[in-house]
Length: 130
Image (tube, rainbow, N blue to C red; front, top):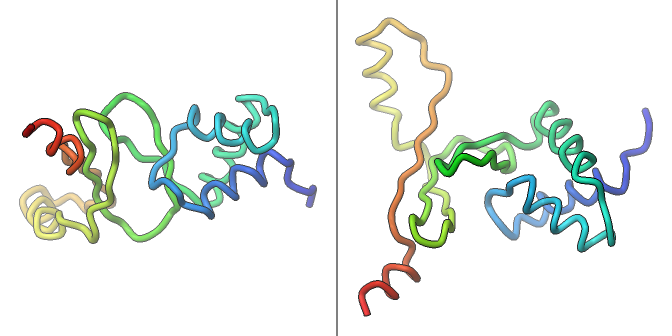
């Protein structure tokens, strides 16, 4: 098996550090370029694609038209600030009861769902209340 590229190693390091919860390809590219001095955008994209295929990370949609990636951990929901775009994790799955209801009423076996709450983060809410 070939040795992973420096770009792939750098992308893995970003996710292992988890300084941020969810990363776009653009954000990852910026961090990897900072760490390595330079990196092709396509190399970052390929590294993310491989990691997603391996199940190390998963793609999420936060409602702003961009794809984001996070460590493939237990399922949870997200809340995104409508003002600054900050994202926070909502622990656990708030849709367990709804999923059961959907299965009972439709006969479908629900295998996935995604929910993103919108609102104002504490910092933006405080700024707005001034």
